[in-house]
Image (cartoon, rainbow, N blue to C red; front, side):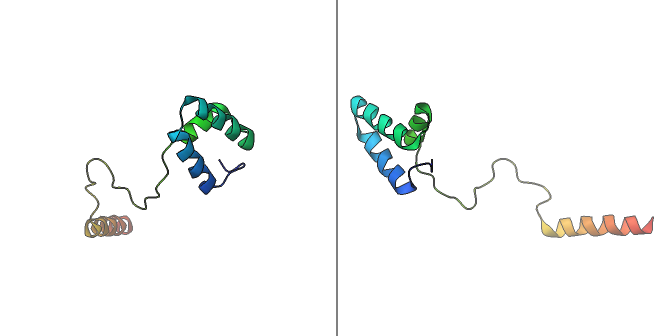
Length: 87
């Protein structure tokens, strides 16, 4: 959404859009479409979307890997390397 607006302006538009009634939303959409040149449906999705929060590490879902232990991995690697040289 960087065609005509930066993040601060986009966030201000989001706040206005969420607090508006249906008639006001229509005029805000028209204004936003004319400024950015994006399609109307895309603008609706962008304005309804919550602000992104950058998360450095997301916890992985599901079962933990069996091979997560560094000592186990080192042992497996050294065995494979030594077996390859012996043959």
